[in-house]
Length: 248
Image (cartoon, rainbow, N blue to C red):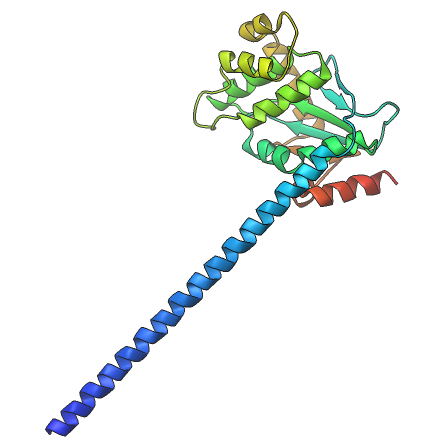
């Protein structure tokens, strides 16, 4: 092979390598740009969601909250009997926490506007530890509260401080502490929580409710007895539209 031919071959190889280098560089740039767009969209959606939730939470006057003897809790303005939104929830359930964070304020606002009667049904769906014990302690403690507004504040505290499904949480001392922070004033609250007085009643209620409602998981949200899809229940605007349409 002549010297000239050898130089030409090396030049072709160098050109091919440079082309491959530029191709890989373009791929990296495209990938980085794509990731950047995804991040921007995610951040924008998060900001929008927070703004929506804040708007819901701050508008309107709070509806009265009533703790019923069977453990359910009703949030509705006087005289409002329909449409009915039933929320079947477990304080230890991560998806229930997500539902509360995304749509909880929407339900409160709809009730405050007199557009819905919201009924909370705290139950325990877990059968294994530590989740079962966590759920039972939290629900039993909630049943120690008879004042509706205090119950709702405690309800929100439980979701805010929900433990991981892999650890023992919702301890007695924590529950008493959060009760005080939620403004619970019942003199016997501490003893009621420590003695877990309501565990048996809550377990019976859970079994009966799950059977009667044919529940397979939580949260289950029903509008006038019909279960809502998650893409409606977990989307504030869609949830509001569904409830308002049911009320027409």
